[in-house]
Image 1 (cartoon, rainbow, N blue to C red):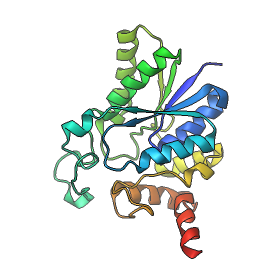
Image 2 (cartoon, rainbow, N blue to C red):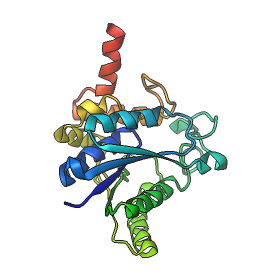
Image 3 (tube, one colour):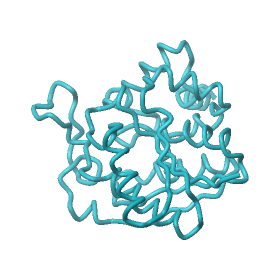
Length: 227
């Protein structure tokens, strides 16, 4: 069977995609890749490593710190994350320009060297913050560019593209990803337990509530607090 590479951020969506890839391609054919891009919260890299261990797939972290040098966003700079009411522009300050494009380009180059032809990413255009690099037309265009630029028949899979967060929770449960979900990191403020008020936390909580499922991450921290 063909080999697959999952771009794993350590978050809810990419974790769901990791288990989707395992279902589609077989665990022995799946590996994961994370990026140390100068993000403020290295906890997400720790989460990605832990999730890969739980899923029993190979994991590697590539250093690409140019985003930190570019700055200008709340994920790499010491800038407060904007709430919805504070956003005057089209895009929130959690948008890192070009991030998904760069991630997938590096992932494709990594895959090329290892004869991997399937890339999986957790982007979605249904429940997201308006990021243009999460849209289906963007990813389709990038796939074609990568194929032309490398003369390599790579395919970008986006299993969550048209799912909302409730749908994603249901899919995660169906795929058996809930044990790993307890160790994911989504909070824009880098907090554990999650802050509960940033857009990422609110969207995640809404998805689990609508799916009628307790978030395993919240459940894990409640367990340790009670003890």
